[in-house]
Image (tube, rainbow, N blue to C red; front, side, top):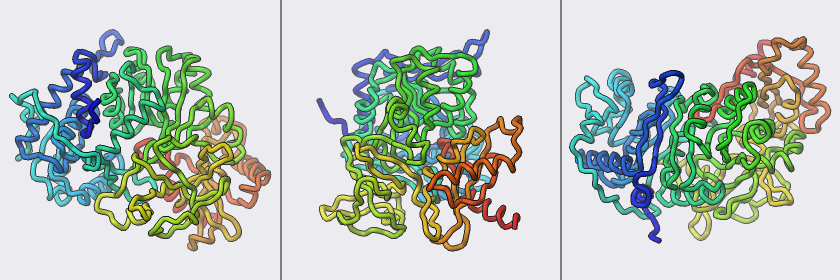
Length: 559
């Protein structure tokens, strides 16, 4: 079988094999009659035709191999067709989370210098009125719908009377395929350079590790993952939701999309599945067709696995926690059943979160913790099993660089003698005696006190045992980065306001819990925060940097 060098060739192949099969289903909540949601769909042939028309239109306005195309398009039928069209031309789509805030968003755009901009009318309005400087590199502007702003091509014009045949541009596995920005949850967002080879490797891992096949009906709640499902040949259901606010999703819409379309697999953040599963539990709703749920972006609580596996899904279903980052995904994987049977209790005792076994394509090592650049790999960096250090990975799913950020790349990559490289995850963890990888928190979030180093995930687990704690965040205060005072911040459960406990009583109970563990026995300060700031992609990663600033001010006020 021919090895596809361009990821868009997968769409060509799937269209040839199953032209009349549904490729994409879009739930249109604007079309509701008698409480029934109506759906529109594209077959693989429909998607191919639309993609090819877009590709011909893009080629006609000068897009070619290597052209950088910024996309600010809402999830839907056009989004998938556009991304595949860009791949087909050999151009490079740029995807940035709009929820990071306009100032940060337009700073990213200014850094990446796109050649073409395709966006919704509002984005074009903001560009022309407020942020012209960020778009000065753009040569052509395309809007998803008609707009009265000058110099803008509509997507309807782009497709108009275009041929539905297009020959996909040949690319090598090393050719740049896309620039995907990180969320910026632990610093400024960075453009991660993806190659076609990386995408192809990810497809093979997803197929093998999670048994996603052409027989699946997949509901990805993160838009980019829809492309993987289409490439595999599965039918994709696009839910009616704001992908930048998964925790605030309307659970009824997700439930309807799953039940109406007999969805078999889904990918989403733990924050989204917490919202959906709690609603299902309260209303005794079960999913009879859904057999695979993938959750990533933050540690998944054992109680969420339990709720899904024992209350909502059928006996033959499974939950999965692929581990990785924008720069390298997935590098390890674990199941909810494995969590519940062998690691949940240890996590509750502060041993970290087990993220499972490395996938066979990659090599993972635990190296000494340092905030400095490591220029060259040396085996003396590697720690023994059980020792906590920084997680480093090498493999074909690992990205090589950040786009035009050489200093950031130097901090994240370690060159090898053979001219390969290791990627420093920025995560801390260790291997146990069974070869399982455990996550202990971000390196930048560790709190280095005078005589001890605290790791967020390990320390927070002790406080999370309390039934009135929704989640906790360990931060350090003090000007000296390497001599800080540990502080625990608590976001109480919503039921706390109805309980008989006072904040003073809760504080005393939490400090008593802390005294019982060597991990937290020296923590003396507990603060309470109404709602933690979290990342925009998964709504699950806690912005501890912001909480540390808040805690510093709060502690000063209390003195």
